[in-house]
Length: 191
Image 1 (cartoon, one colour):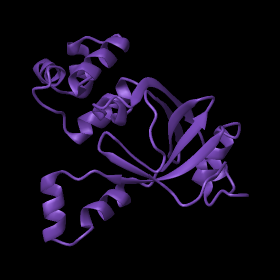
Image 2 (spheres, rainbow, N blue to C red; image 1 turned 180 degrees about the vertical axis):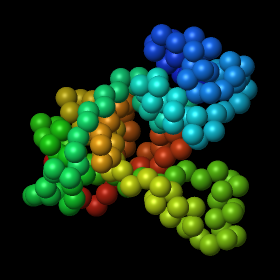
Image 3 (spheres, rainbow, N blue to C red; image 1 turned 135 degrees about the vertical axis):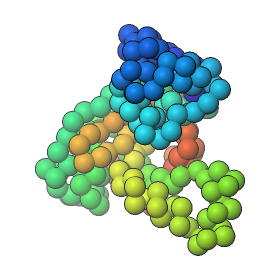
């Protein structure tokens, strides 16, 4: 499914017309129509607002390989209340372990941005790794691949939420790509 098809489905699931979504995003209805027909893409700020309004994730909207299902949960947490113990190396590990302590496996992941050709070239010309460092600085969330009852779940831990998205198809924990993100298994495992 394309970005536009996913946007249209998510908008309808949220019970919003194109006009209503446009009003909430402060854009024109024609911009929504353009995005839903894959004739354009929203900017990052609109993409973030859209995902929040439609109760979905940016990863789901951008993942054209259909690795993420629409099945997503978001649980509020207070990250500072967690203590690192056992195999947990930080509070994000502890939060993921707390949420999925009955899982078959929890793999901490290292996330990096999948660079476009232009970004890669710019990164190469300016200073190697600058784009990746800027991306890391902007996204300090923890990512985990959880295996439970034959399912795989991509988990994102921020300071305020644990967001869980069930994967539509199995991925290799060693390395996989979803949307604009490349995930690699960290050198340790929580379970």
